[in-house]
Image (cartoon, rainbow, N blue to C red; front, top):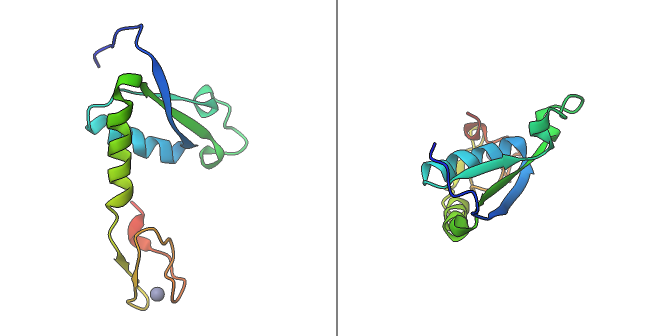
Length: 110
Ligand SMILES: [Zn+2]
């Protein structure tokens, strides 16, 4: 990985669960953004609560901030509706469970 000028400023982009942050890190890196992860989770302080409870932060070079925000906006908008496995009802992409029968959206898992 090429190193940037050490004098380049870093800016906090997002803060979230370690899992969330890792997903965005991958997304940003595929778009050519240099990402730095920070947070207590990375210092080995997660023990008792596990990864779900750990938070982390994404810091990026300030000059790439606008580009990174654009990528995240795009990511937030591109969700597609999904169809419930149980009742066949169509749900908005940001619904985690079916509005009609409350089944989980199984497809969202890896
Ligand atoms: Zn349903």
